[in-house]
Image 1 (cartoon, rainbow, N blue to C red):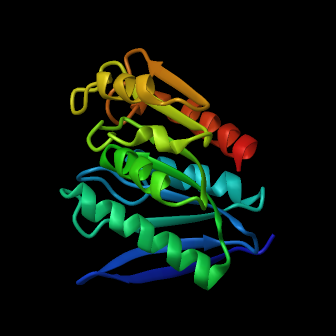
Image 2: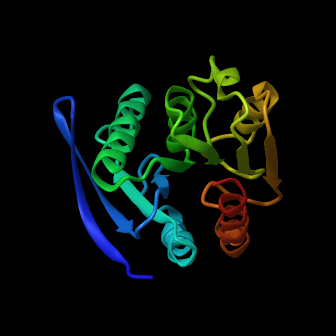
Length: 199
């Protein structure tokens, strides 16, 4: 299957969202969202590994850099603008969001607002802004957190899971730090299998 890589420059509010799209001819895609002080490919390049595997299944991947990773409202705005862009320009309108840290909580908030998102995966997520999480309705969510995360407590993810009313899977990884350094291979497999099941 032919692969094209395109740079993304998406105007939003008073700034520019930059990123990349690993494009295949499909209506399915993953939007990968980084955490605070992280790179667009995720810790240890984990997102890129997952993307490389899913390209073979006809699933495109988009990676964006938040304009302001300290402001969740701005992050949500960037996600929604990115969804509009990859839909209108590339016809990708069936989306899985994968978000780390603030990318996870922002991804949930964006999913609530946009029905093009079919499923969402959070990793080491904070719990800020989850007041309307019941509006995920029946869209499946997988939530992963390391028990030894010293940046964002795993209790944040436990709290999110407690309020999800639809299909969900909560995975707490013993000895897992914020980057889930010792779980790279397991994480890649879990995310790939979830995406193939629900997207």
